[in-house]
Length: 370
Picture 1 (spheres, rainbow, N blue to C red):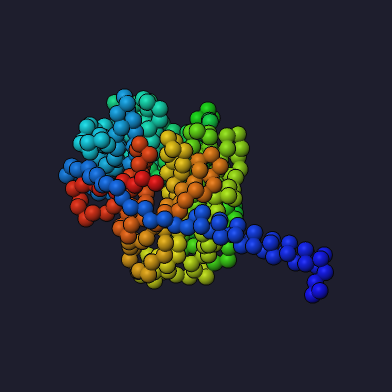
Picture 2: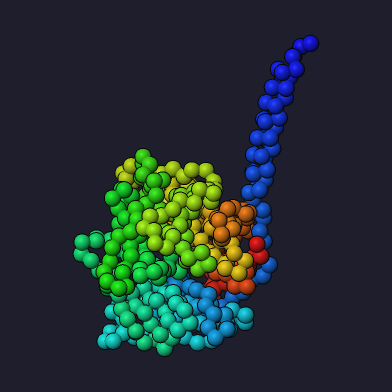
């Protein structure tokens, strides 16, 4: 005999183990193999002559059982409401500047409950307003010992969580472990404090380019009472649980290859063609959006492109997670169109994603079933 029974059994088990590993890896790879996702419809909303076609404030909100797309004109400090079902303009809400109104204006907003709106203002102030535009309360985010600029957008809105309102803040290009970009305002104490540093992925050798990787995306998961964070260069999602100060790395949410710093050092010309070309040639993660009805979360993954333009068209993927445990369910390739990842929302478990149309008088969205 060439082999004894014991040797044959040992080799058989080894080969069987190898086959199991190969099959498991193939199964895992197939489970996240990208699928093409095509739009099932599109919808447009007409803008008035005073409203520019960019939006730092955009939100789907249900008021009196009616679904509205709300858009902020930050030049006139006005929120416009459109009926999502008909795309028709319904009403607008304007905020007064000065006196008992706003200090300097509105940069973005977030509807809170059925009767309040949380406004993020210009000049480091936040406000709580009613639906008539009256300011109920204001929150000063100024602290001279914290030399950081708080910011908020519709894809990184201010989030009320327990006693705090959570914001993001920046000091461009500062990724040191001592820098804490997540800022919070204590409602009971009326003061500002810093919460968390960047994840470890930021502390690699090299330089991230002092802008695109500064911004953090966040969304509030009401169902599980937590905040979900998407860092632009992190392959995993992070979460903030109630009562915990630290961010939790969600390892099962990992996707894609590790992203490395695009520059060896900060010896570059900011906003130059070479600077844009280098950054565009690197993948980057984008915003996260939660659909509580179907209990999923979508995260943008934006692919590299060879271009020296400031904002070139880039191909995008959507990573779909189970909302409960943030396991990856599917990965989708979006159509090769010029989409705006920061202007999107869910309605009736359809995903509405803004596409650039070149028409300054309207804003258009493609609809996706995932």
